[in-house]
Length: 457
Ligand SMILES: *Cc1c(COP(=O)(O)O)cnc(C)c1O
Image 1 (tube, helix red, strand yellow):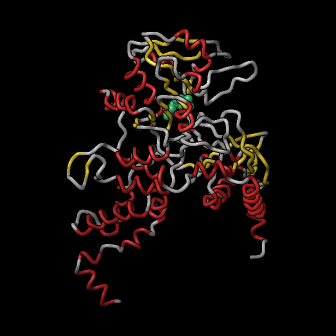
Image 2 (cartoon, helix red, strand yellow):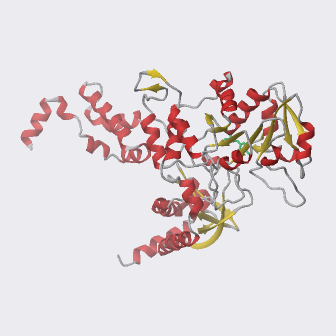
Image 3 (spheres, protein in one colour):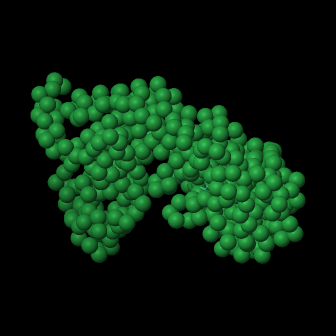
């Protein structure tokens, strides 16, 4: 050892602390959890290099590495969605499947997004994602992808109805959230709106009377985020065909095929078969994919949209195409799993998690509750669910924790609804609850510390 120490003293490279030793610094260990070990290792490697070049003292490696860490205070942080709202717009709607995440990573470098590797020639951008989309919706002759559902509508309005009229029911003039309204969006393209019918009742005859030479298309909007009940009537998509104008249908929620759990939710295949010429939908709602807008339907109309100059401004990037394709081809999405989770299994998980927390002195119990689809989908549909119920103060403490968790407050309790929490996140969830306990209930924490001190190990 003495012998090596003297060798070290003569060779400056030997003075550089080993990576493992530097990574053991609590600040860097913590950063590795937040930022990933690879990133922190590369920062440490840079600092080690600066020691070798004599730029900094050997003892300053960890400090230099900490100083060089990227500032993450303004970064997006992962949040466990325990709200019971499957598609939570404030949480970025659908969580991607592991397959879609892997596709994102694979597509991050240079890819053949617009190249035919066999011929070396330019090819149709995103052709494999479009093929997957058409395979998923056999009734669609053609498909196109844009940035989001709103962009799909804007493109349809611009390409098919600028300077013309869009005929739409007064019952379907909806606001889609954050103050954005579909009628405003459509009018912004230079199309004129021709409102027909009344808020609660619109018939085929109302549409028929409005169609004329100045008609761009008839628009059917699925009012996805609210429901009018009582004395209501709307014309089905099927009733709108044959009126002498194309029918564009905005299903919003992104279901491509029938979903037994949501029998009243329209789906692209069904509406195209019923007579819609073009269907538009979002990719990050019930489809469970990345944010994007889907345009599906008649080949000539989809082509008109895809070739319009505006289409270039609404074009999706290679990452979106990769994630969309993986979503379509891949295993079931987290959104699908959440939609289909069996209430009995959720109840069993809630019981197990609550028992574990109670054993640590935390006021946790398993309760039955109701989850919702959200994100502008299936309004009025509730999904039987189960939650871990905690004192209300946990809501804030869990939001502010290192592994943020968003629950919902109901009846003076903080509910962690397990329908939207993937089972593999259960441990992270209970760890977060334990970590939040000091903030949420200082007295309980003290009691629990005392209790765990007396517990047999
Ligand atoms: C969600 C929704 C939109 C908007 O889609 P984005 O992908 O959020 O742009 C439009 N129409 C309907 C019916 C919707 O539900």
